[in-house]
Image (cartoon, rainbow, N blue to C red; front, side):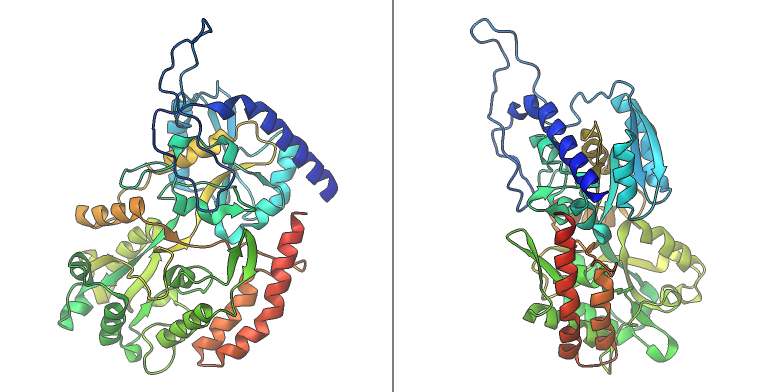
Length: 461
């Protein structure tokens, strides 16, 4: 079955190359080179041609398409989008997509990480044209052949320009590189950024500054964040920094230190690096011993009545947190006492603003419309509204969205027995949360990490 799948994938890839060959010499009107994700060696900048007129009596050149959105028309074709759940935000995009691009959209809910389904649909002629991508099942979904590379279909004008809203984000797309090819793309809003939500009353009662005001004054640092957390945290009364630190997402975003890194495009274990050890130590210092300011497992019961800060992904957390504050005695039954501030940058983080989940959009195996995924990703940048307590907050986070690389990482590695990255890494952090021997925990995880990487690479061969 795998041999058949691989053969079918090769045939479809050759077909896609043949169909798009004529599009590979598009001109552009922007004299500056177009940005591409780091490590993307397959993309090239088309030759520039500012004169669309005739030459030597030939027919006029066709209008230049500098962006996928320029004149895209599916001619009434059905475009299938596959997502793991019924997301109201995505479903609300469907009428706009249909009207703008002359298409009929079919919303398909399928398994969270079902590569076999995507391949089977493509082989049956019912390809999922737009596939929801998540860092928890990448790069496995690419290595399996369930999605196709998008590099040949991305136009120069699709990439975002710093400081200008819209466009594909390198921060959202870079986590979905495999063997120097881009499999998923996203807007600046696709990648789930983190924010700290907090109870203003606790800080007022302690005589402390408002964290958001500190941010605006340029004084919001990691050390200040820990200092203020320690001053307000009251473990005896269940008041913690409820970080939801599940090790697989949030903490990696905080520190920018990942257990697997890519060296010349090859996934390589990073758990023996000094930076990874320091990252685990930092986690231990937050959740264990006299310096602890955080509950180790981010118990949901602490998110409202007992929270000093809560670190969550922006797009879904604000409404939930606001509603929780309305029913919380600690917030005096008033969501106006809820604060929101960007996450301060951890001293180890050299990657970018803390993210939680990298999410983007790809094209399923067998699709005849790979450009649909790119168009959907571009439109997604227009859909996130109403998640900020004030216009000033929105301006701050818009600036982060449009000008920052987001710290997140592929986590969809698995071995031949079905063990995932979390099953290898989480025990290290569990040991740290109890004040145990971090070095021994890392040593115990080493064989599993090597097997995990080797089996994931072998999947694509």
